[in-house]
Amino acid sequence: MIDQNDNTNKILNNLSNDNVYRVMIADIDPLMRDTLSTIISKIDGFSVTHSIGNFETVVEQFKRDSPDVVILELDVPWLRGLDIAKEILEIDPYTAIYTISTYDYFEISQFSMEIKIAGHILKPVSPSLIIETLKHHKQFYKHKASPQLAILSNIVQEKSFDRFYYNINNLAVSLQDESGHNTSNVNTKLNHIHLTLSNCNRSDSIISPFPILDPTLLSIDRIVELCLFYIMNSIFILKSTKRNERLKTVFAFLDKNITKDIGLSQLVENCFISQGHLSRIFKSCFNITVMEYIHIRKLIISKIYFLLTDYTISEVADIVGYNERSYFSKIFKKFEKITIQQYKQTKNQANTKEALVMSDSHKFINEIFGIELL
Image (cartoon, rainbow, N blue to C red; front, side):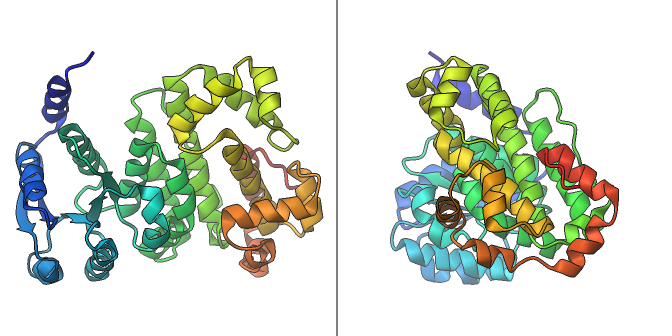
């Protein structure tokens, strides 16, 4: 068994002190504030500049001193904590806010999706968890330079594919807003996110499909979401197969058969793995079930067809392996929280036609999603 103190010391030793990040701690529990301050004070590159127990003063002190990192309690009352987080990000959208509470991320996600917090820390906390969180912050945030990269890095660290999927639209909109809706700038940011997160895994680098040779494609509403999905799906597959090589066969089978009517029985039979074992290791790597992942993969493909073609709902349902249109529509609404018709209304026909004139657009869609639209 690895000694927890040895592990913590190794993490501490890996942190460099090139920059100093100023940290604000806001928690009503003085013992928790002292504990966090003690842990953070031992990490090179971080300095606790504020320890606040009165939530009424948090925003004013932030306005005055503008710390780089805010660790914000949600528990009592936790909705007030989210309100404060929103106020801080309205003042400075590049501030890294890490919420901390006894609630897990799934429980708070419906309230925090639009707030774009950098990460969530579950109580009770351990020194290694705090250190690892700030290590990732230091590696990816670069003094407020890329909030999307910091959030995505934290999601990878947490192995929370569900958190990513339910925040994908907000992340895409944020990235586009920060890029001034300039397709070349968006392209550059996607490339940076992909390569940085790939290198984070310290394994064989992923060949990035970005920059897109015809960045006009990125002018289509919701295309950036699909690009972000490709990036994160690649990273999660890479990390999960490194932890358990049995998953390589599973993903190879899914890549080949994702548009067919497949389920757990087919995976178990063709990948020579028990259903119980597959379910356990997949849940531990993605925080969703295998069938939820299969549905998500199918929905991503269906969204490409809805955005880039005039296919009917029934035609797309058949393409992605759903035998009944009604069941397909039900699954779409369950995962996307909107109907297919509402999703299709985001399509801008003029921009779509312009973006698809160049063959490179078709080539890009085919290369990263395996879809031939021509």
